[in-house]
Amino acid sequence: MTDSLASDHFDLVVIGAGPAGEKGAAQAAYFGKRVCIVERAPKPGGAMVNSGTVPSKTLRETAMYFSGFRQRGVYGVDLRVKPGITVGDFMQRERNVIETEWELIDENIQRHHITTIQGTARFVDARTLEVTRYGTTTRRLTADAFLVATGARPEPPVGFALDDEVVVDSDFLLMLQRIPASMIVIGGGVIGCEYACTFAALGTRVTLINERGRLLSHLDHDVTDALRRLMTARLNVTVYGNATIRTVEVAGRRAAVTLTDGTIIAADLVLVATGRIGNSASLGLEALGVRMDARSFVQVDANHRTAVPGIYAAGDVIGFPALASSGMEQARVAVCHAFDLRYKRAVSSVLPYTVWTIPELATVGASEESLLAAGIPFEVGRSSYRNNARGQILGDVDGFVKLVFDPATQRVLGVTIVGESACELIHVGMTVIALEGTLDFFIQAAFGVPSLGEVYKYAAYDGLQQLLRRQARLRTPAHAEPLTDVRN
Ligand SMILES: Cc1cc2nc3c(=O)[nH]c(=O)nc-3n(C[C@H](O)[C@H](O)[C@H](O)COP(=O)(O)OP(=O)(O)OC[C@H]3O[C@@H](n4cnc5c(N)ncnc54)[C@H](O)[C@@H]3O)c2cc1C
Image (tube, rainbow, N blue to C red; front, side, top):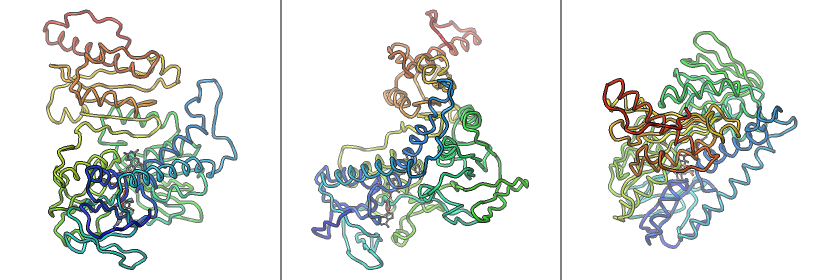
């Protein structure tokens, strides 16, 4: 980032050039506001570009390619990672993608005539920000509004320490110079599950230790059970659920994790992925009256206002769902509110949740368990990739889609997909839910053949069949038309 300062007063000062900061800044600048971004890192992009979303997904894609994972078993040959492949081979692609992302962000910032300052920001008062670089205060900036978009970082483990060599967090993982032969992942959340799958595809022997009984425990049982089954069957990942760690000890270049039940697991590398905390502690926010929770996440209202007028917050620094996609939208909403721009008033309530495990997993809208807990009636329609020509061609016959819908109106309430391209396919379901569509959309639509999209149609047929069965059980008149072509 380059310093390009004209004056020290701005309409908006954004702290952090991650996805939330960039998009919030661009939104205000698009509407003619004078905007400045302060970023402490030499390059923009935050966790999304530099240590999280983009590198981890690039590494996954590279692992899928080098391991021939998508073709395993399909052509009767076993394509494992070729011997002699180095970390450099994997990381080259990642570097190319990251450098292009930096260029794209810089172009966006320049196109919107946004001023950028490199340094660490801290509030002096509710209208003044101090920027320091190499320990020296370089500027004082004032603004009509501030957007705090400083992100989050891995939470340090309790009871043992990282050594950034054998015991690492997700920020250090990508600096590895070697592909470990064995690896222990501590944490069964999104980051833990994704990296467990990626490294297992690379040929690493992975053991995942989860303190909860289920992986991704906020999702439906059948979904997380399927993920665990497939991770074990396809990738040989060993999963310990309901496991508590007693010690993590390093000896030479290996680590041993001892569980409270006495089990000892040794590996070349331990990845600690047990959660993240907000980057808010050193901003001087508390002294101004901005509220933070125990995990340093800034508390905001629906308009992304903090308790202090003129100071907004968006992205990972406010906590859940802590996704790049939601952070960008939150920032746009915050900025529109700050300048009374009648453009974007709320973040869509229909947010896709995409998990890049192997297989992919994606969900949008309501889950079965959330509807059960809320006492809302629902019915479920399912279909399998096994019954789909494209699924057969790709060799992914374990994938499935699950539609959750209102039995009275057949309105689609939620969609979950496990399998190849789930993170793309989910946007069809997202659109139907956002437009308040019913199963009839899928019944009437003509999907390309062979395509995975067709799984929606057969899940809708299955849903109608489930309704018929329910109506038969209740001795009410069945659906007027006979159902044909139900392949599930
Ligand atoms: C391994 C991993 C995988 C992920 N995968 C996905 C995914 O697949 N999909 C998805 O949507 N999300 C994913 N995420 C989450 C995603 O990366 C974050 O949600 C997103 O980056 C948050 O954006 P942000 O702008 O809020 O914060 P960040 O991206 O963290 O950016 C914050 C910026 O603020 C700067 N900053 C902090 N404090 C100061 C200060 N005092 N002064 C100046 N600058 C400061 C930081 O240097 C940083 O550049 C993943 C995260 C990780 C770690």
